[in-house]
Image (cartoon, rainbow, N blue to C red):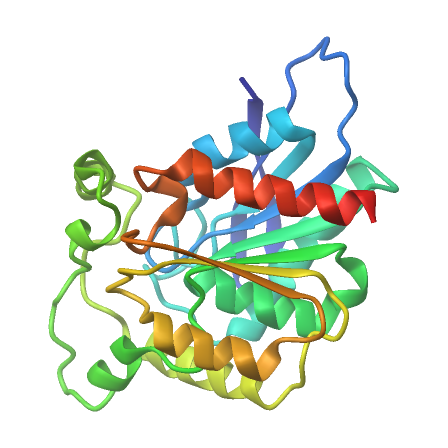
Length: 274
């Protein structure tokens, strides 16, 4: 079991709350790599305990941060005005990780909106990454943005928890989590999402960066076809994809989560061995 500690750093518009997971004291093996976890819309990095445990057991030291307006970080709830600032926050996290454990390769793992953030991070800071993992990434277009931006007012239609996973306990925990946002999308965030998707689409591919794309075949929150269209625009020469039959949006919390995470850790092993 990993041990974790919570810490903070100052960003341009307030405090960010971050977390580090590492092997328990006395572990025989030193970490082999740094994993940066980047969470999705409306949630927080605390939902990734199981993922962090698996990665630490695999030899990672894991870092994550609650984005502005999310989880325990400062800001109006789920309001993001510019995702370039969020990417900068992730880079601050990465700088701390590299300072804590110099010389280790860095793997970024981004889920959903975090996949969009991760893709943009790779465009800006790809030379600092050994590999990129995108889970159900918001890329190309997001139907939620297209549907909601023209409306005034934006309706209060929270995410349907049944679309997260075939495991009903995942949806139940999501609904009961006070750090998860359960209200309407905020217009500035929708506008910022739209702008970031357009920026990513015109900012070039990922070159030779080893990239793994995983997604559920039955993803009803981020359409598989939309993610694929976005992936095709940014994919470089080292893309691997794995689509899981029947799985929904949160593949790291699916009924076959261990299979999914084995694909991720196997991919990381291949990168480290290369």
